[in-house]
Length: 148
View (tube, rainbow, N blue to C red):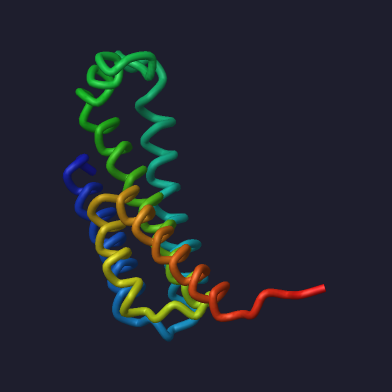
């Protein structure tokens, strides 16, 4: 199997996960089992297999930007980096959906966060955390302060 084939398979698996999170918000098993356990688990297994096979003895490393650049000159290790992003961003997206359900945040409000998490991971997480904080602020403002 070539790195391009594995890239396509992993990217398509992640896309299925993102479609489930975005388009089937009421399906309980989507953000609790299918996406974070099955899809992210498969991506993590692919990542581990690539790293175990390719990292030992590879040129480059993690000590500097030049070392990382050298490491990622290996197409398999570049693919491992991509699969790492796919797995972690998708896992965060599943958490956003589960957390928003628990907090009563409408799914339509979460969709932009999911879109940003899909494309620009940490930006989407930051956006969701801001939405989450805004929701918590509204809840706190809705309660009368306790008096002794």
